[in-house]
Length: 149
Image (cartoon, rainbow, N blue to C red; front, side):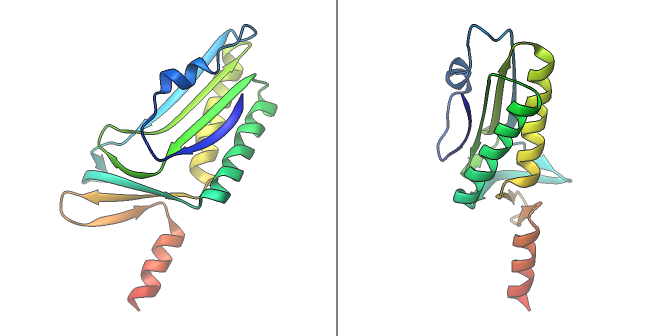
C-alpha cells in the first residue's frame, strides 16, 4: 500500500499500521504529530486544519510515491486530519514498512518533511488570550492583510 489520505475524523493508527504489515518487511517506522498546548510562546487552546483537498490529495500522493521510489519501501501511508482538533489529538500520521529499518526511517522522515512543506494544508491556532492566527500560511496572511487595507 502506497497512499495519502485526509481524515475529517479521528482514526486509529494501530489499525492503519496493520495494513502495512507484509511478510517481506522486516522494519516498520511511524511518526505521529499531536496538537500541543504551546507554540512560539503562546498558550494554544485548539487548532483548525483546512486543506485545498483536491490538490492536497494529489501532492500528498505524489510525495508518498516519491519516498517509496527513493528509499525502496514496500508500504507507506500518510493521513492528515482536517477540521477542529483539541490538545493531544493526532493531527498527522505516517507509517512506513520496508525490508530493512534504514529505508523505513529515511522514507518516513522524507514523507513528513515534504508533506509539511508542499501540501496545501493550513493550521489556524486559537490562543488562551482570545487571539487566533494562521501558522506557516503565507497565502492566509496575505489575504488577511489585503482585507484590512
